[in-house]
Length: 215
Image (cartoon, rainbow, N blue to C red; front, side, top):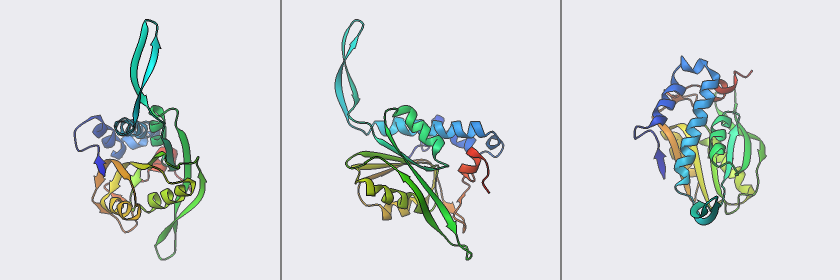
């Protein structure tokens, strides 16, 4: 299932406009904060789909019966670009366990590339709810390969994928390469993907915009 959060006008459209804007992008702190806000909005929407149980809470004046999360999800992100969005998710699921994966494009002389994983740190995700974030879902290869690597830590009950901007090709790749219960939560969807696998109009390199250029 695919949810495009910007299809209905809400404050997320403002944040998406700002992370795309070349003038506003010069402010790295604002770029990171907007990514964090998008993560927070996604967390709120995902929370509606999770399991809840009733709990008795003692107040200064009596007892209140209130719904609380049955269990915390496991939050995962792809380093380094996903850190700001991950923080937004963690702001809301503040007792969650966390997983971190280093994945990058290893380019070849012929212009092609493959996805290389260097680091995976994760708790067991067996029969858990997994929420994984990455600002850009371009080809979808990094996301699919990362989730398959996490499956070595157990098979989750459901996977929620969060991205600020996705391409149609990336969505279709994830759908075709990940079997089971997977839901995508996307800020916006762009149709074009360049020969170098960059989303157009997109926003550029999210990792560089958030944390500075890399050599």
